[in-house]
Image (cartoon, rainbow, N blue to C red; front, side):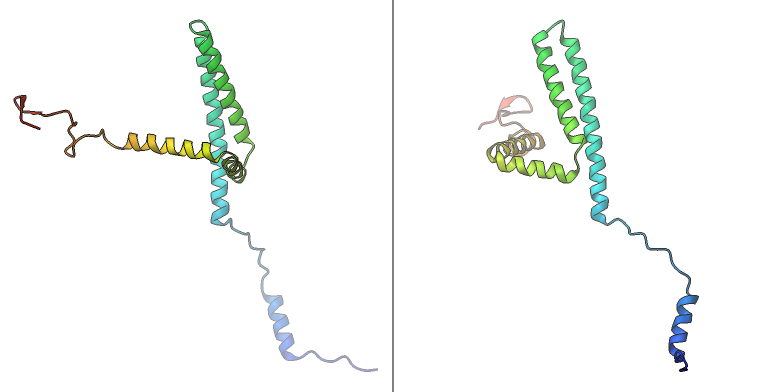
Length: 154
């Protein structure tokens, strides 16, 4: 009967080292910065949806206050509250990726409207961020009087 071959010394040493090494628990994968950012943005979307819901409730309350004095305006305000509530519900069920996709699809369908709204927003921001137009020293262009209120020329 043939004898089984003896394992070599090197194989015994590596095997015993592996057995002696304590087993490590599997590494928990850390969320990547992108995953953390998406998680943060999804939380912000949920917070924004809650805020829009609160705004809708406030607008509805304003409509109730307007019922006696201006019923037509109250109906208009109540419709606006319904739209804000619908917007809030739509946002609440979506992730950041879905909102970006929806905005992108809307931009493809209505490029002129999106461009117009972006231009209007830029114009409003520009007007709000710049001081009133006038001379460079901060005075309005129509002010030509100084000191004793005498005219000093053009």
